[in-house]
Length: 81
Image (cartoon, rainbow, N blue to C red; front, side, top):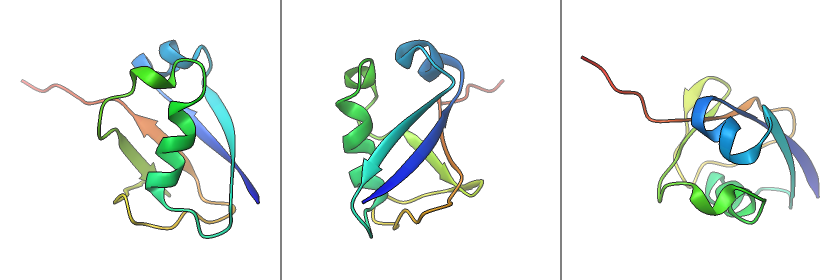
């Protein structure tokens, strides 16, 4: 099992009531597994169907593997003009 810290920004920090949360996942867990672990935390049920997750400052796909030491960030959708 690996412990991962996920940084939260804007609306997600408000939903979770923190700027970061920690989750424990099995080795070779995917981004999809990580999102599932976030959904069971207080505030996580309000996440959209496909939240934007960055791994090491790059957009991650649901099948990407999360490794120990990865920088993880849950970013809210951005609106532009």
